[in-house]
Length: 402
Ligand code: ACO
Image (cartoon, rainbow, N blue to C red; front, top):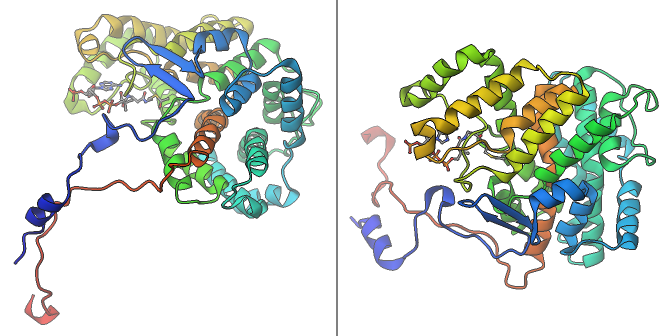
C-alpha cells in the first residue's frame, strides 16, 4: 500500500497557513494597513483625513481611479452614478419571491447575484469602458437594493432614488421616507451615514474581499463575484459583528453589569467573546473606531439622546477592557463595529440591516480590488493547495464484506 502522505511530502512543498495569517495573496496599490501602529491609508491618504474632509463619493472615485478627482471629474463621476441608481422594474419584482421576514443579507445576496441576469454582457468583460460601467452600476445600485431589502421587511412601498440628493441623503431617503418627499434628511445623520460608508469602504484582503478576488479570478460574472463578497461578509466574525455587538450591549443592559460580563469573556469556557473588540490585523486601536466613537456622540447629540444607555454601556466596557490584563496582553482594542451599531440604531435602522449597510459601503472596495486583479497581466486563477491528512491509498471493498 502506498502511503499517500509520504509520497506527497516528497513531491510537493508549500506552506500550510490556516486562516492565511502570514500569507500575502496579491500585490495591491489600494489600501495600506499598519496594524501595530493603527494606520489605515487609502491610496496613501489617512482614513482620518478622508473621514473629516472628503465624502464617500469622492472616496469611491479615489479607490477606483487611484487619484483624487478634479472638480470636473468629481461632477462627471457623480452624474454617472446618479444615472445608474434605478433598478430594472423586473428586478423590483424579484423581491416578491422572498418571505417578508427574510434576513436582508439573504435578500441582498440573492438580489446582487441576480444582477448578473440583468447585465449578462458583463461576463468575461475585458473592455475597460464596460468594466468602468459595471463598477458604476454596482456603486449606484447597491444603496437602492439595500433600501428595498429594508422596505420589503417593513412591508412598505419601495421609494425610488432622488437625484437631487447626495449619495448618503438619497440612501436615507429611500430607507426612511414613505412617499419620497415626506422625509427631511437631517444633515448630521447624512454626514454620519457618509462617514460610516467611508470607514467601511475598503480594508485590503479581508475575508469578503479575498472571496471576491478568488471568485472573479476564474472569470466569473462580476456581479456574481460581488454577491459572493456579500455572502462572506454576513458572518459574525466579519461584517455581522456590528449586529452582534449591539445585541451584546443590549444583553448587558446596564453599566452595573459590565464587570460581570467582562469576567465571563475572560473565562474561555464561557465561549463568549466581546463583539466589536479585536482584529486580525490591528493590534492597536482601530483608527476607524476612533472616528466612529466621535460620530456616535455627534449623532446622539443631534437626536437628543445624549444619555443613551447603550452608549454608556459601550464606554464603560471600553474603559474596563482597556485596563484589563486579558485584553492588554492579547492586544484587543475596539474595532470599527464597536460603536457603529449604536449610531445605526439611533438613526432608526433595524439591527438586521447593519451588515447590509456595511455591504453597501464595501462594494466599492470589492470592485476596486476585483478590477485591480483583472487588470494585472500576471493574474492567475486563485488555487490554494492543502496538506492531505486522510486515509492512505486502499482497495475498494465490496459492500458484502465491509
Ligand atoms: N473577545 C475575547 N477574546 C478575544 C476576542 C474578543 N473579541 N478576540 C480575540 N480574542 C482572544 C482569543 O480567544 C484568542 O485567545 P487565545 O490566544 O488565548 O486562544 C486570542 O484573542 C486571539 O484570537 P484569534 O481568534 O486567534 O484572533 P483572530 O485574529 O483570528 O481573530 C477576530 C480576529 C475574528 C476579529 C476576533 O478578534 C473576534 O472574534 N472578534 C470579535 C468579532 C468582531 O468584532 N469582528 C469584527 C472584526 S472587524 C471587521 O470585520 C470589520
